Length: 304
Image (tube, rainbow, N blue to C red; front, side, top):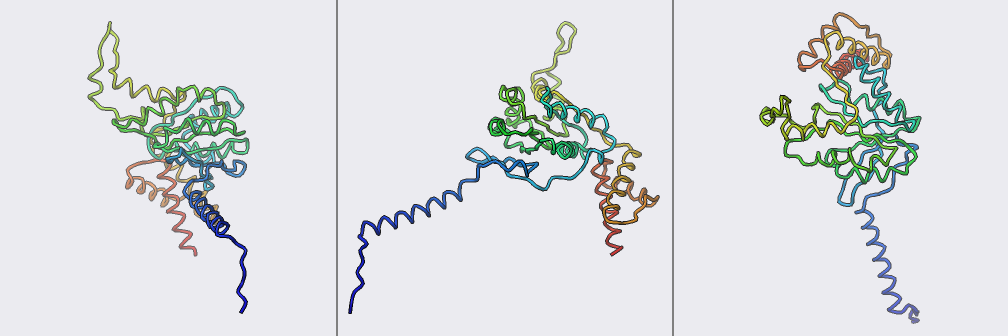
């Protein structure tokens, strides 16, 4: 019986084994290292920045709210100011980082999303940055500096506790030279707090009178200094009853039209909307939209 003759040497067999092991090792390492490439900004209007032990990465976010500027009611002055600031930014004119602060549910975040929807065709993009990632702001700016788009770095619902030192990263970024040298990045932040930090009665005890002038204590000055780094402040306030009902009517009619539903604004809808706001303890645009979803959605279900 003839025995099969092999010409493969032990050294060649070991080499093939090492190559296979190396390929497997590379494959496993690539699975551990996140993709550092940029999103396709021609297709992606928004992205989320994720920090990790290697720095961070952009993750494309396709499900952006389709809200328009016209959907936002009773915040006309705020809309005008932020639209104007964004237009300046888009044409390369000087523009300010903006802080939108005030009552919850009054349209702060929605206004930023609406502006991105309005200006996305002109090259505006949004990158959402979590509070825990503020220390990586310089890296984000460097990564975006050469990209041929304009970027809003969006910090939503931003606030810090008294013992939270991460606000210093934002404070440094807002006055740092790397922002002044990057013409395609702005920060828009929203918060329920005007100064982003909690304010206590005890802080005021450090205030002193000097030659008849009131000088705030160091604790108050430190808190104010952070929000002062934003060149544009926009304040949002709770809605009065008539304003709240006008927003409810807008959303009821808008959602009803989308579902081909005859949901006329009636006295019954008005009364139910007021009870809805009373139960939630707030009259706001968010409350109005939630009620409209409930009201219209119930009638779509009954129709089917």
